[in-house]
Image (cartoon, rainbow, N blue to C red):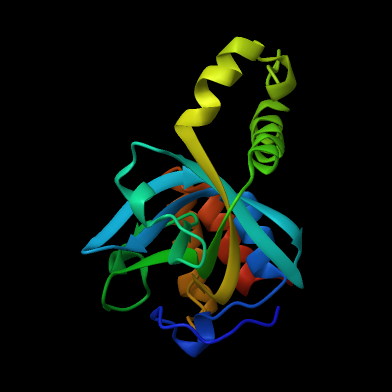
Length: 211
């Protein structure tokens, strides 16, 4: 997607950089984000965030409690940063063929955004989508429309919803690209043994697609 320049930096060695449609799918798969805004000092909170649109053109949406310290900075035109974290794990150099430096494999997406506050109607629609997204796989889901109306009416004035227009998007997946096939297979084996199967699968997909 086309984005404007922004001043949020991210360490991105070229071989680990990721682009769309990886980014869009990544945000969908890892919707719990760190939300950072600059006030007199940096403030951060952790909230579920969903995407609206497609890989070529999307915006984010979420809400925060009005008693959250970030609330005073949540204004139209405010700039903020979302950090979406994927699967990660320590990788011991003892798994390699030869002595080397241990490392950490991980994936992350940083989205610098401009805030636009939601109307009450937009907030309710966003809450409906948010609750339905996470409730749909429950055995007995309790969707937003089925919540008691007095309960909803009591809570709505206590939160503020917002859209987040992407200004800059950066993504990285450090999955042992450029390592020998033997080392990659050893890393996958040990991660799987240690219970980090999702990361192991990602490393395999990144490096051993034809195996």
